[in-house]
Amino acid sequence: MKKRLVIYDETGDEPIEDIVFSGGYNITYTNLSDDGALRKIRKLDNGRFGDKHWIKNYLYRPIAERLVEKFPELKHVKPNLILFLEDVDFAPGSAKNLWIAQMKLANKQLSAMTGYQYILETRSYYIDSMQREQLIALLYHELRHIDKDGDIVKHDVEDWSNMVATLGIDWATTQATIQDLLSDDFNQWHELEPMAKQLNMFSGLRVVR
Image (cartoon, rainbow, N blue to C red; front, side):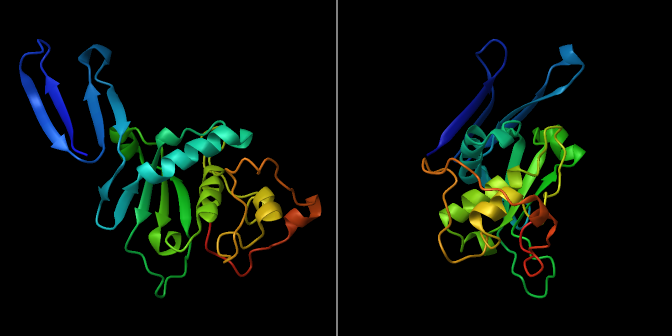
């Protein structure tokens, strides 16, 4: 569906910009009355980002919002501050770091211009073979990396202990269907025993971080 964005001068009579487009948009603007601070309106949904990434906000943000709404441990996460990018060109080849997805802080320049504080990057090579339930679990996994202070944190074991205890250590790569975290039937996590958290359960799996 085509969209149209028209910007008028303060009289409302003279259009300054008249843009027709079919994707999303970000608007950054300033007011001299507040020392020129950058203000942002984030409405990006999809589109190319650089040579090999595609913006996937339209697909992943709604799932992230539902996860935040459902799980108390994610209440502090703000999905509208996350830019969801997918690497559409990656293939393993001789690569050693075979992660499926990673959450990271946006650099200061990107954050200042766009308002996004985090980037969640996925690789379509892996995502395309995932079941819906696995994709939901993957997004939960990555959202857990944002702590209550807004920092990026590591797992409590090689993965999050509640995910291992509930979904199994191979939840990201299994061919079997795992539980749907957003299903009405899912309402409680299992937890590992305290001693089990000291085990290295991912010695042969290096695909998610």
